[in-house]
Amino acid sequence: MFRRLSDTGEAMLPFTLDGLPAEGRAGDTVAAALLALGHLACRHSAVGGVERGPYCMMGLCFDCLVEIDGQGNRQGCLTLLRPGMAIRLQPGRRALGQ
Image (cartoon, rainbow, N blue to C red; front, side, top):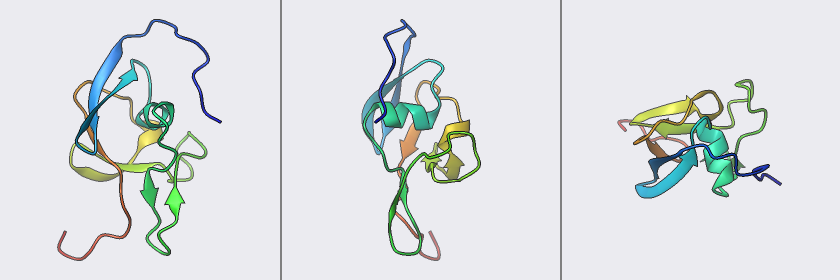
């Protein structure tokens, strides 16, 4: 469903996704980079554990929440990818004290 239109020559930016090396294009948002890598789900819902992923891509639905550089619940669709970012998918409800 999601694919790049063409190779337009943008620089590739290295980042980590759940501790593993990954790359996205300069100008991508975090959500766009994850979709381009085939990650359709960014998190699991707190109630029911249902997979959620980027939907509106403009900051209204909050389905693209990820942890970026240690800060949770960041909207991936509104955050531009930067070199060296540490991105983690959010597995679901957090326990108290975490």
